[in-house]
Image (cartoon, rainbow, N blue to C red; front, side, top):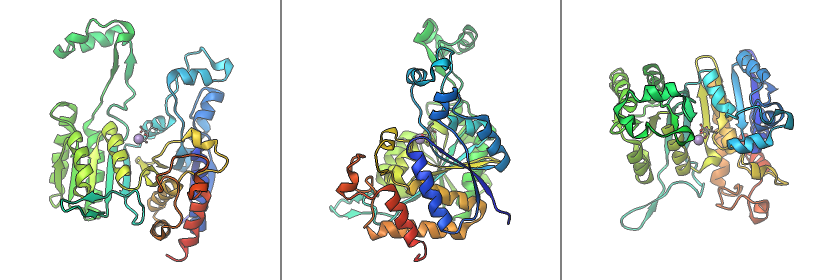
Length: 397
Ligand code: IPM
Ligand code: MN
């Protein structure tokens, strides 16, 4: 197999350090790849007015596999104020380049596999009626539709007249008709049969391969009759092609409640974009937190892997980085799986599991400490120490 080239986009804030540490671990584990670094994020936006340089897009188009650290996003007014002075007042609007990448490369499937690592004190626990506490091992994979829904980007503050007229075709728009100017903002939830089909196909195939008996579709069809209705209709079609797998349809609000009680009943969850965003954070909270949450954005030609966490700009200024690198390391494992390097990814995952099980090296999040510069003096491992511990375990596992 020829050596793959990975487009590495460290991005902003803690994205940089966790990316460095993740690749240090992967290379130590024997991953043989050419790495090209590409710029992305807030620093590009502030400098050039564009968070996604065209060179980065070209590199991804050419090499087709990317790794993203994290990106800072700020509100519209803050974005304008931080732009380089010559760029201000030109109506330049910030949009997360992650969303642009997902749409530009048609990365329609977002897979977020979460599992508990025994020994992590932040794992989900349940108190039984007799007062005993149990900690069920969890493995929950969220399949999030990644390009449509409320993330379509079709949004207006002060919608133009033609949009208002079109909306007035709907009788239920009547109460909003006379709202003028910026008193009205509209976002469009776009759901396509093709988009539903792709995410559901991926989820059912995964369930079949991993012998998972059920797929849970989490929509809200009692309210969003047309958009969620289409999702559920396609889910029933896809289920018929996989008679061995049961389809559970649970409304998103009910699912979040069930996840707080019996999360093991939903090993594979499919959701539209925003619901998938929300439910994947909830699942992360049950399985060790964002310090362990990894993500794959998959298209037909391109795949981009990332930790789910953000850039945590306030951490980035700490003299010694304290972010948990495990999410980035596990995102690296997804990248290796994608390339077929499962021997190495398996070894890295076992090394992470061994470090957590040893209960000696723990980052601040695992100790439930505040993210503060003095976390190491309270017993928290630094980013580097955690990565070192994983590397030390590579051989042993
Ligand atoms: C995620 C993040 C992104 C999202 C943000 C950073 C745009 O929360 O990947 O879950 O909302 O999709
Ligand atoms: Mn999110």
